[in-house]
Amino acid sequence: MTATSVILDIGGVLEITPKTGWVQRWEERLELPLGTVNERMRDVWRAGSVGSISERDVHEQVAARLGLDAPQVEAFMADLWAEYLGTPNEELIDYVRGLRGSCRLGILSNSFVGARQRETALYHFDELVEQIVYSHEISIGKPDLRAFEAACASLDVRPENCLFIDDVLVNIEAAQAAGMQGHLFEDNARTIMRIAAHLDAGPRVAGPVPLG
Image 1 (spheres, rainbow, N blue to C red):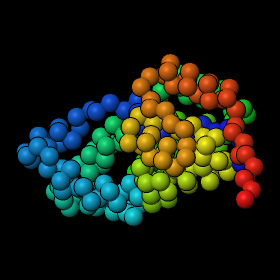
Image 2: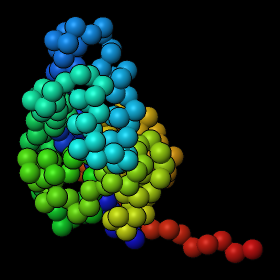
Image 3: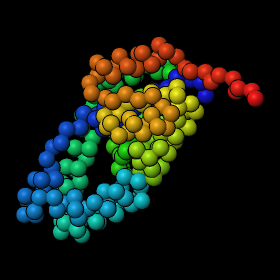
């Protein structure tokens, strides 16, 4: 429980995920007003992020709500995953790989049903860290404090000994509210420096319970 830990987000941190404009392209192709796709699919996207819908059901809902045939659904979902998965942040991944054995390593990600299989196949995050906590598998997403508690529990670490790294400020604030240390990812150099400082400081040992 006194081990030092680093837990990282995936999208925008371990993956570089710029917007590709795929939704707008589909709206133009289907001659739909701007914003229609997300308006029609919002509850499906939410269900996918907490695992209350299967991939097959997602495909069926895309077809029904957007009027797409089977090949179009496959193309639509391929565009979704291309943006979702982005490209690997090789510099940070290589640095984290070098930390194995010196601290407990984990991932906490707001995700979508099907993400584990695709990210494992492409990026082998399951070999990079000890535990991956996906929102679609625990039915809880950041910034819910329970997501951070689940990540710490998965590694059997105390929150105060854990540095959480994310590219979204509200998630950093939530991690701090859960008792963790937090670092807002902006670039690799500052993030690597922050991780190194965290590891140099070592684990915090709880003091004795005061009497009286």
